[in-house]
Image (cartoon, rainbow, N blue to C red; front, side, top):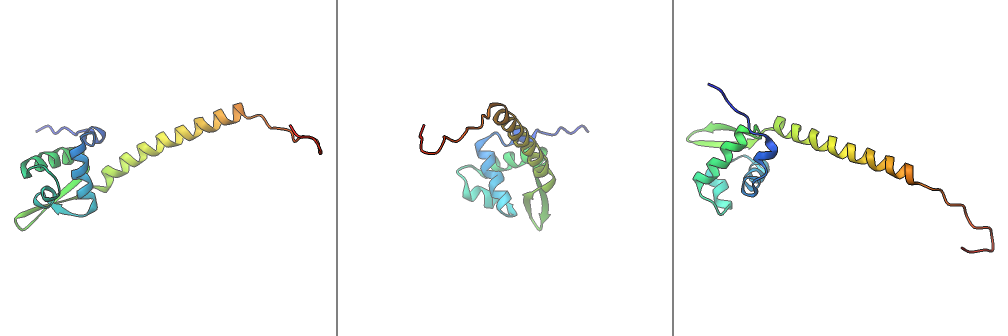
Length: 114
């Protein structure tokens, strides 16, 4: 059986799915608990969780009759590394531009103003 992994950025592109993920990231919870906090049905929450599972952003485990969801740290680490690389590139480019355009000013002689 072939499994496909959803890109985590694509998974989080949906605003409702981000809310579902935010709820899971806040603390382990069930579909019922998530649906209670959102204006969507439990089946819709389950569908969003399926996408988050496929994107490897959440994990699930069975506790009695409930399936409890929690964030998957390794999925978040990948997103964080990617964001940090963008930020690092942006800061490097900013530094390069600042250094290329920097012109030191010379102070005016005493008693004279510019």
